[in-house]
Image 1 (cartoon, rainbow, N blue to C red):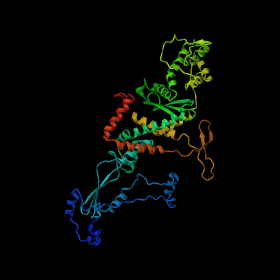
Image 2: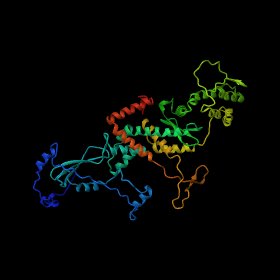
Image 3: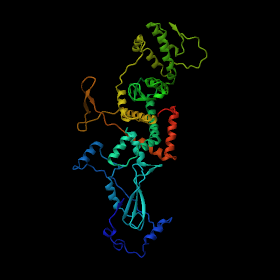
Image 4: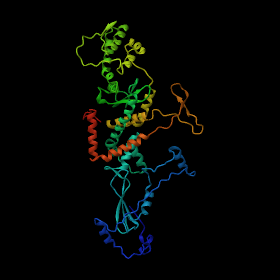
Length: 498
């Protein structure tokens, strides 16, 4: 509560400040009665208040902070949506305010801050000398929540931050901030659905570019903790040529027999999903049968390498509905009228299957009854490093939160996958940097890429506001419905720790 000095010291008399008029102003009590009525006959609409945002052409040379900000963020061309103001500076503005009621315009006598916790938002009640009261809030509302609170919750998750850490930073500064549990509810109700919708939209573009093309995938798993105590395992499928992530599978320990088996099971499910790319549906249908045929060939070859190769390569004839050929035949019984769909020479994926089955390296490895495919995993490892930014292993997340953080990390990776090399502004030549290589134990020269583009964050933030504005039910009800939807979609047991 702030109180202005006594009016006898600071305020001039009414006769000195107000122009003479034939009408007399009502007394305080009379004015209060008029304010309590449904309509004010003397109300006059106030003129529109105009705020201009003028970005400086050059930062001030005598302000070192301004110079550093200009170098890091560039020239600011639009007004900010949110600002941080020191409380004392805000109070000094309140003292300059005048009554908001028409025909009064008296100074503010008292200010009161609402004691109700509203996160980063707060409400002020002002009282002028004549007793008129009005309220002012620091944030607009989007739906039933304050805009600033939804924005903080969304920005924290979108940028890979931690609710608890953000709250600790705000507490250190004495800055009003939403409770971490409130931020978690905002994220469940508004942010996670927005991220999922944006993720599906961006992945459609990624898949569309790969349709009709021959692609080779590499997969890698990443667990939340080492050993056999991991709760989550994420398997990521990346196109070897384009380095684009086309799919990921997030497994919780209850989905597998134990945490050790999660990666294997996630790869199986992920491969099935990857084979559903438009044009390659038939490959997905035959994937399990081809895998089973490989195991069958190894088990029935009698440890003879040539027999193994003959059995294994016979799958090329079988999937094209040819069960007898010049130097052999299928070992199965006569097939009846079955619903199996076979490949034709024009079917997408047939040539890719032939390349895999007859791959010399695979045939060579089959001599030891193993069929691992080794490939460079540096790009996938780089993504796993990026994933740590959004989902650090030091903190626990619920399944819905972990899934949202995985999706936002994939969006970040795919959004900046083909950044061009940065150019030196003075010389116009490509920029390079010197880096220490752990592999070669020597210094190497690598190109410097342009800064990452984070435009997707603003788009997701706008979607969060749209989601919050369109929500009619209470926040707790929305969170409950969203949690039930996630549990049903991913078959999370009720007794499982989410």
